[in-house]
Image (cartoon, rainbow, N blue to C red; front, side, top):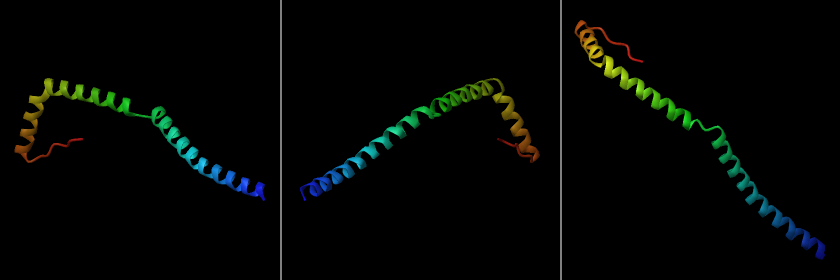
Length: 82
């Protein structure tokens, strides 16, 4: 009888510990995945490059582009933007 009670208590303890262990493992795994497969640095670098390109284009061609857009609007044509 004592062995059954001891076994029952041990099973409950294992069951409770397993849920805690499983949650910790899941959290650790998701953290590792986010670190290994994160694209944040690439996206930040891409945005930095695109901002620099846009700045240079506006600096060099901003007035010309705006003049052509105004001319298209006067003719009733629309400028296709991507």
